[in-house]
Image 1 (spheres, helix red, strand yellow):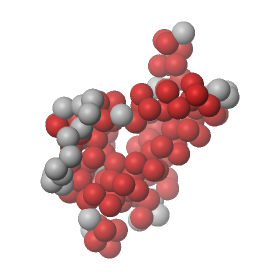
Image 2 (spheres, one colour; image 1 turned 45 degrees about the vertical axis):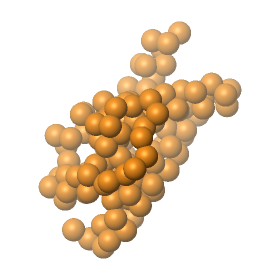
Image 3 (cartoon, one colour; image 1 turned 90 degrees about the horizontal axis):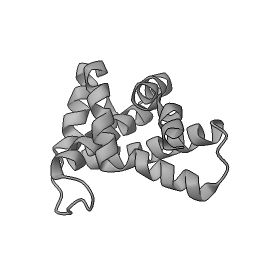
Image 4 (cartoon, helix red, strand yellow; image 1 turned 90 degrees about the vertical axis):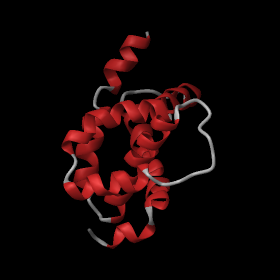
Length: 132
């Protein structure tokens, strides 16, 4: 594992959350959305812990051993806060997912970030069509 792990699971998750947020916002704009209120609502529905937890199920088989270790580092981070609209398990899986994206960001693995993002969120357009 590289030195990105030295930041710790929660810091990796903090950065990973930002990485996912910008990728989702970019995708929504690329799909032609322009109403910022609607974009915020859609983005929130995609990055909430239950949604990230579900999408992590798609990603887990794709992770390398190193990425799995980072996932566990983020997932197993102890916190005293309770998630508002998620189970503890969903919250921890989402935190693990964010840690992987943060780790890849610090490691400069832009292509891998895009690959995992596409695997997890490539269906955004179809999901938007189903909302109409």
